[in-house]
Amino acid sequence: MAIFNLKNREIECKIVYYGPGRSGKTTNLEYIFKTFKKQVTDQLVTIDTEGDRTLFFDFLPMGLGKIRGCDVRVQLYTVPGQVQYSSTRKLVLKGADGIVFVADSFAIRRDKNMLSLKDLDLNLKECGLNIFKTPLVLQYNKRDMSSSADGSIPIMSVETMQNDLNRQLKAPYFPASALTGEGVGKTLKESLKLTLLNLHKELKWAQK
Amino acid sequence: MSIKEQIKSILQEAEIYRTQGLLNEAMIKYKIAAELIEKNVKIESGQALVDGITKKIELLKETISKYNDPDKTPKMPVEIQNLIKDKFSFSDDKESAVLEGAIALSKFGQFERAITEFSELLKNDSLRLVAAKNIIRCYFATSSVDGALSQYEQWLKSGIFHAGQIEKIRLFLENLLKDKGIERRLPLADITADISKEKVVPEETTFEKPVSESMVDIPEQEEMEEDEFLDINSVGIAITTGSQRRQEVVLDVAFQSGKSVSLIVPGREKILIEKFKVGLKLDDVQFYSPIAILNGSGVISAFTKISSGPKMGSYSLDLKIFT
Ligand SMILES: Nc1nc2c(ncn2[C@@H]2O[C@H](COP(=O)(O)OP(=O)(O)OP(=O)(O)O)[C@@H](O)[C@H]2O)c(=O)[nH]1
Ligand SMILES: [Mg+2]
Image 1 (cartoon, helix red, strand yellow):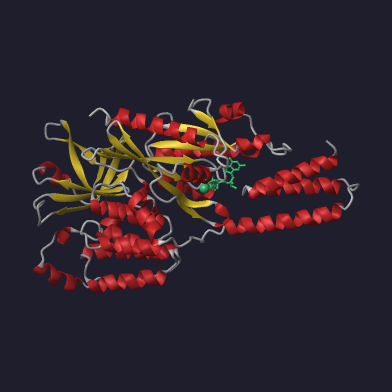
Image 2 (tube, helix red, strand yellow):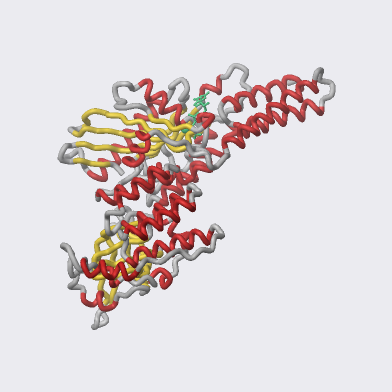
């Protein structure tokens, strides 16, 4: 739920990184924090349990400066991907204006990607939102592993992932490596673009 | 690929999954590798390899069960608790926002802090009961039944609750105790003290009948999940007037706690006021939220005349929502 302050011409929106456990959501935020120093307005807050799994959420506030006369601030969140943290996921998802779905390219995580996308669909419905109408970007992460020297890790092709996850959604998608940063910025920028466009459509803030 | 190479590759795969935190996947691969080795007796130092793998599997099992330990909620620094309080409340109304923030804190397992926040709301007449119930829940969530009991007794003495409210809290607490297998009759509010107090400060409490809870007959479970429900701005109640014409009266929501909303019925709505009573089921109700309109029904769980303040003469109506 974006917060508008028309008097001060401020807008604050929320983008949530969703996806199965260990797919690289936190790593995305870590890379953004390191790389987009100018836009990042405060510390990256991560609350880890043992073994660097997100237990609650990560939080990163950014300022994008003035867009069409409005001061735009965006807050990035990650959800905990592990299945058992379902109620936390719902809580963090509440009020999201845009979503980045981080899928794991490891073939062994194929089902988990699909289950997590289903879970997203359900949770959005519970918030009264429709996945087709929510600004959504897919990221196929860990592509760096497809060129791993010995090729010992079975990696899905982008086509397979498209077919599994994006056949109906037809959302913008980006192969990426959150570890090296490849595709991370592109994913974020596309998500911001879609999210702000959508908010503009809903609220016409940029016209006034 | 020779069998040896195959095993090597599977072990490498397992190793990568392990470093990525994909522990179950790693374990499966280690097991496959171990089986392959055992089937192929020809592999030199096979037994040593299998022993090494078995050790790794044991370690993985340990780590997995450590992660799955459900009651490990780290205590967060105050700044993060503040962040949660701030970021997970969505209402414009300050007090509802405090309530949402406190509920979020308790959902994140920060019960002590949540109790502090809920306690702030005890000052607020319309939120006092929800706040109190949530405080009790927090004590139960930290397995502190004693804490809940002494809190109740303290409230009983403090006199901050109306007789009707303390009665609801008592029932609520007794039910939670029952769920835990504890049958216990809790001390009742001292009614005489309450009446004498009411003489000094006349309040709407005299209308509040403690029977309402049992009349409505809503299972406690539903209450546990109530804060997940949509935010509702207003409620449309359809009524049939004397000439058999169906009319919808739209009432603003003064306060919402999950599936329970408090509405203000203006004194001029005479037909409604005559009709409404605690326990009455309304079958044709529209719930207007910013994102959707829901059809449903509701049961009146409280209906009291407001006898002081700017809304004097209006009625306060609590509705339990069914959708
Ligand atoms: N090779 C490689 N590893 C990655 C990449 N992205 C993340 N990882 C690794 O995958 C593991 C999990 O990454 P996280 O960012 O913690 O995953 P997450 O999605 O936040 O996981 P949860 O918090 O449990 O939901 C870590 O060991 C990362 O180093 C990537 O692009 N390539
Ligand atoms: Mg994470």
